[in-house]
Image (cartoon, rainbow, N blue to C red; front, top):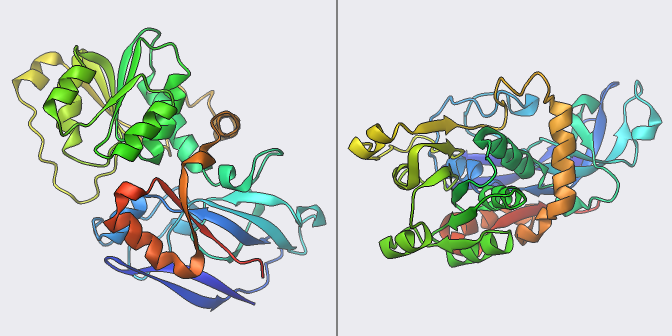
Length: 336
């Protein structure tokens, strides 16, 4: 049996290759992919060559445990159906819809411990957004907002929008978002922001954020946004950085204003949570909350483009060259 697998082969080049997929091992299931999500942040860093050779792809995901050596497979959000079951596993696995942190390919073998059954009532396109929702929750947990605080979210891509949706459920005094792109600013309002602004326009910044805020979430992926974040935060305020800047240089002025305000800059990454929380907030508990938030937010509404796996190179080019038109792209897979 053959499968289609996506490889990052060179900067700004991905290719879909046909490979033979073996039968599942005794303790494996074989999953036929239905849909997989492209990360406009992390995957664009790899696509553009903005991550150094040898950098671990993801030390927390078994299928991505190697270092960056082209060609390589990548992707961490796939929903599919179990079609074959190894001899050492219950036959009841067959036919189940599952989520996996797996790369973009049409079929793959995997142990059950590395898949998550999709709960009843959650559609395929909502389920594929699970990692983004988990990330948004992790960011908010690190931010630890307090009742009545003023918050700003810089960056309204998929992660920024879902973080906005989570923060909008909390009793904040104000929730303001920012993005360079009009489409994303509009979506931020629909996700619950009180107001939004274009950060390239100084007068818009002053109008939208007339006084210092308690919390700034820097989720734009743009290193230059960190300086704006430190300017917007008030005395002893918090700046939570969820962006991965890759190997791009950080040109940020951290002068007297930053120094005297005693700001806290918090690096946030979904693989780990604050040590104060980890004894109680197990991975299973976090996943349960993430699925519940998927139900409440319906994140599939952020999907703007659906592209067959065979046309994946065009999807990456679109993200790279025409990001103003795009929020979330998913790859779709044939049934045979």
